[in-house]
Image (cartoon, rainbow, N blue to C red; front, top):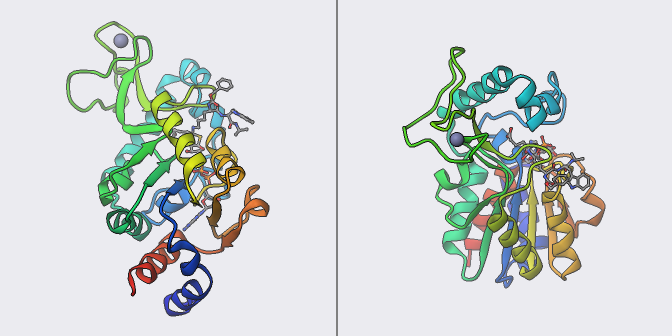
Amino acid sequence: MSSTDLRAHLSQNIIALIRGKRKIAILTGAGISAEAGLATFRGKDGLWAKMRAEELASIQGFMANPQLVWEWYQHRRDVLSSAQPASGHRALAEWERSHDGDFTLITQNVDGLHRLAGSSNVLELHGNIRVTRCFKCGREPIRGVVEFRGEELPKCSCGGLLRPGVVWFGEMLPEPELTRAFEAAEQCDLFLTIGTSSQVYPAASLPVVAKEHGATVIEINPEETPFTPHADIHLSGGAGDILSAMVLSLSAI
Ligand code: BJW
Ligand code: ZN
């Protein structure tokens, strides 16, 4: 669909529905950052096409082979250092700026691209890959950027191993962010789930909770997900094109 067709389609069918919704909550996943050149997790070209998730994104994996886990995160940090927000990130930031009402952006992404794009009310459910903290005492190191370049594993002043500040399988999500995310899902009247395979919990529960509490739920994804049958509207396509068209149409009088 061209962007003109998309705008026409959206203005007829969806913009009227979105307009007037004051409490908006949005959940994003790796798909929105795919358009910034960052690989998603699942699927044939995903980060886990070659490696098992449990070896890289779990406490057990880190304890078994911290070098391997650090190499993987250092590589992703290096890729991220030259990445810029994509049009989907920018459209959401623009939407938040122009919106009169609540606007909560909940992300599973650890890349920090929503804030870089200018979004301010962002809840990072799975942490941030740029952060480093101690595996043992939890503190963040006082000295600046911690890197792993295949030499000694970085250590905390307490002697514990340092680790990337992300949430691995089996770990609790950060409590304040999780609480605020569920509150936003319960209270919103419009919920968008964008670029996520809806397979990882508790994030995957958020659109379900929103729907149970009466919100209209829109999914944006080129593929169907386990949530698709429950969505009020599934928009099939890339996050950038659809969100840009949406925000443009919303700004038109
Ligand atoms: C596009 C696009 C374009 C492409 N535009 N879209 C209930 C039931 C079953 C299991 C559990 C449950 N509750 C908890 C669990 C266990 C577990 C879990 O969910 N397991 C399932 C996988 C079975 N959850 C946890 O362990 C969580 N902790 C927890 O629940 O604590 C309490 C507890 C503790 C102990 C025991 C029990 C409970 C923690 C989850 C942490 C997830 N961490 C990761 C890694 C983060 C660090 C890192 O980045 O390395 O987070 S896993 C990985 O998946 C990452 C992502 O944030 C997350 C979600 O992935 P996402 O974003 O959906 O990406 P993809 O690749 O899956 O999908 C991309 C999508 O984009 C696709 O659909 C494409 O089509 C689409 N797309 N191009 C729009 N242009
Ligand atoms: Zn420590």
